[in-house]
Length: 104
Image 1 (tube, one colour):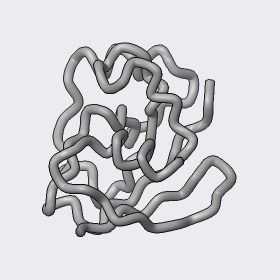
Image 2: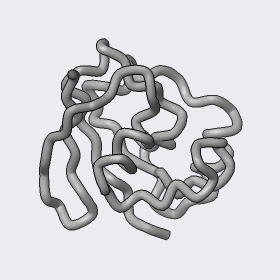
Image 3: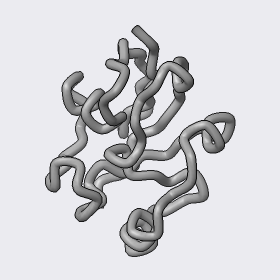
Image 4: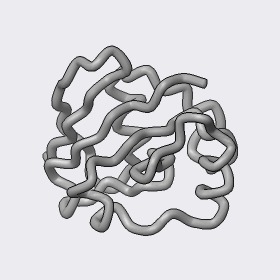
């Protein structure tokens, strides 16, 4: 399996084995990270907000207009902000580095 490197809200870094073919959000949720993911991956709540490391932004793809609209409503939006439900975890993302965004 491919790896995901995560920094949680307290600044603690860890690594998980990511399951290919499901979203980054599902991988984080299934490994007990503090994502609410209230909408279950429907891109309608922004409770799975993460910051993608700069080195990975191109590989994770462009935000959709819907995703951007939700993120722009958050006070803690940054250039690397993404909704983890909108990123499919693929083998190309092996080694992905991200930070779980603050809860708003």
